Amino acid sequence: MKSPTTTPATAPAVPDVPVAPAGAVPVESGGTAPAKPSRLPRPRADAVRNRERILAAAREMLVESGVEAPLDEIARRAGVGNATLYRHFPDRAALVRHVVLFVMDRVAAHAENALAEEPDAFAALCRFTHAAADERIGALCPMLSEDFDHEHPELLASRAALEEAVETLLATGQDAGLVRTDVGVGDLMMALSQLSRPLPGTECRGVDRFVHRHLGLLLDGLRAAPARSELPGAAVTLEVLRQKTM
Image (cartoon, rainbow, N blue to C red; front, side, top):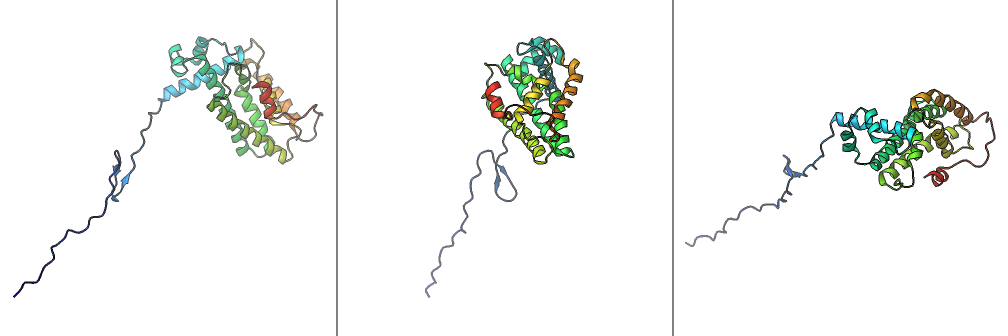
């Protein structure tokens, strides 16, 4: 009797399994997780504090003495050695650029926080104006010299954020009928810059009481009603201000 023909047994089909890329981390689900990108080590807390102290001291010195302020005096005021200063900022140009960024970023944050936290837009404007003066926004003008890199990407980003924050603050007050409408952000920033810059040869701390007194007079003039004077010319926009000073 002829034996029935038998078909050879075949191995079960094995589904294609993707090969894990190099560096991938296996996961229990059977797939692979992409490798985590390597992270740069965070700077030490004391290094961050030293950097902040240097920037704050440089801000004060640059307001008082201009862009040629002695770097060793900046280091002394910051309470660090010259080597520490140069480790963070290799040359004067780098230090000046980062002081400008430091001031602009802090002033923008003051505008945003004031608008978010104060009961009305005029109260927010008052808080912002005094806080911006304390940040020595007048330090920007003497630093924006001809050899300053006005088109540096970091500067452009910080300037855009500052302009947006202050424009929103002022426009909110104007829309609410609390701030006179014949002023622009350029008017406010120019006044702040002038009022927060001390006379040559004087220390910033010695004129604070005069600065805030004069800012009170400025803010009275910004109230929507009653407008105490008719201002000559048109409201100064940021574009006009930039053409004249930057």
